[in-house]
Image (cartoon, rainbow, N blue to C red; front, top):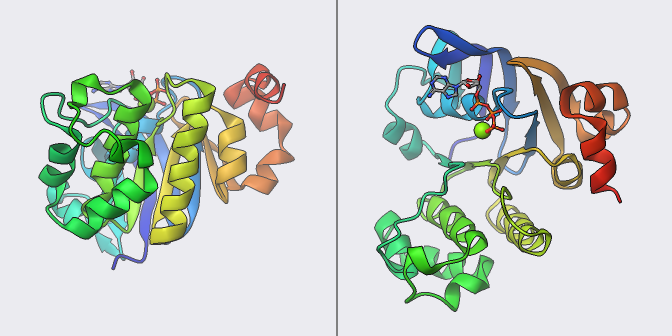
Length: 239
Ligand SMILES: Nc1ncnc2c1ncn2[C@@H]1O[C@H](COP(=O)(O)OP(=O)(O)OP(=O)(O)O)[C@@H](O)[C@H]1O
Ligand SMILES: [Mg+2]
């Protein structure tokens, strides 16, 4: 079981472009880290650097103290790190059951997926294409946990969902973390969700880390919330 993932002074980007700079953070199983920032700030790039999908120009990414910066994505997955991409990772022409089995044939895991996401249990024979946005998101997360990761990184899982569905998804994610003890990275633009769910947070602004600390500390930093995320986002969520 992987016990830690770490970004050490990471500069990462695409081709010669550097999209994020100086990212340093580590995470243990059971911990919940939120990554906040506006569109284009570099949130997804931080996750991609861990998975090998963005070019690391400087620094290292580590799993259990092993430098995996040059390792292919599937090997990082075997070491216990999984990602639920922003685009939702669902096969539209396969049923819900098939989507789960393709990820792993282990029956216990299918049972866990259905326990965590009861809606999926009701739609096992439906095609991925016929699911609502929220259900596709649930399936995408369920697929990611089929491989028993120790760390799961969720990239804006609530994007485009109604408030009710978003609440349902977060309820299942919470249950998932409690039941499996995995470490969770939640990329979000909704500050309230991160403050509510995460122990720690990272705030990125134009590729730079402008805050790293506990969510309690972040609550006391309206300056960070205002400049990096926009206070209007915070106040509208609290209405
Ligand atoms: N495949 C790519 N090739 C080149 N540049 C990219 C690529 N993906 C992202 N970028 C650039 O890198 C920067 C950071 O993008 P990133 O996707 O990490 O932002 P983000 O914080 O996840 O934004 P969003 O909230 O919109 O998803 C942006 O300037 C973006 O245009
Ligand atoms: Mg993104």
